[in-house]
Length: 167
Image (cartoon, rainbow, N blue to C red; front, top):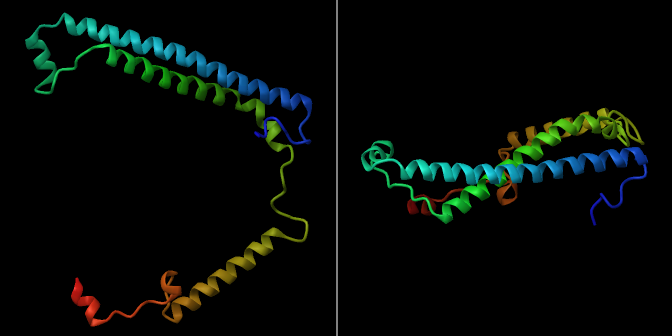
């Protein structure tokens, strides 16, 4: 199940209401965008079909310049409607999410872990030790001629004269 049905205990009722409202706004604006985008796509298709039907052949050839002419039918109308709906839904939902993110700033801080220290000791010191260990291991591999590749167990396969003649 989704974590939306089982939120962490650190969130208050007001925080849960805020999250629900932001989700609702994103979904609502997504559906509004789908409606307006679908309508706009269909209207643009109808307008293009109307303009295309009132142009003469010489003007169409000048505009298209040797490419195949676009035929407007119910398939292209359906495509324009679906593309308009998808783009409108994406644009409206994205805009709503970006406009509502300021309501979630304080919720991001709830339950945040301090990354500079952990339970047993200093995280910064353990990272420094791991980095030094990695550096010494890489330096040792380069000095012994094994390289950084992990293929063939970290050892380069010796090339024979038979292998070089195949290529």
